[in-house]
Length: 228
Image 1 (cartoon, helix red, strand yellow):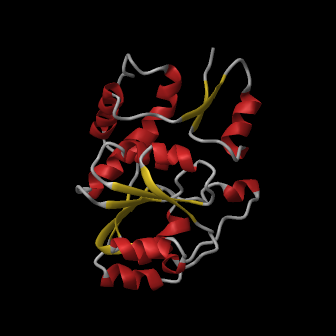
Image 2 (cartoon, one colour):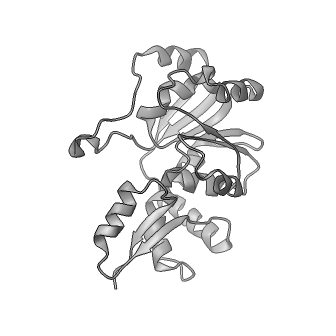
Image 3 (cartoon, rainbow, N blue to C red):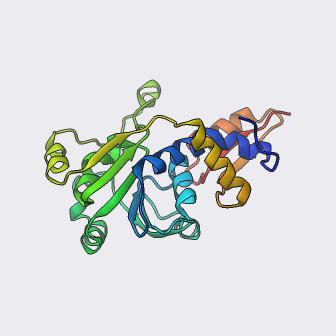
């Protein structure tokens, strides 16, 4: 489909896969009004799109992150509460904040997670009965190529017992339909969907673009390289 006339090139570069993927996940979750939605890895590009897409819906959005670096920015985007977690925490119900929050809410109705290998086995314990979880990727998809150790993962099968007992829905998602991308583009044109662009590089600054994309701890949103 064509880029909308109102969309700048840099925004278009950051738009398609994130917008189509998150709109597909939200459509498939069938999120109802008043629901409590948990978005993991809040600073990831997928999660930023999801938070922006949920901003104008009648839902309560909570987010997880390993730091509170962008707490105020996430609140302005509609996050009701940002919970800082340690990836070494194996049981989220024992987390001093997340555990109490889950108990007060009766569990999260929906979970949007870009990295199932980091969160799936742990978020199950803080989900509501009949809740739905959806993921679109994994954290450890390139780390071996750069000789970097992945984060801790837990695959002991225990979580499947909770999936059965709580009647949970566990879904995988790969990109989406053309209609998802069209819906996201319409929301962008109406002002309902904002795209978080961290920075734009050009004029041959390829090394700086790559460094910002993969190494910058203070990156918030997509990093774009714009050809002259």
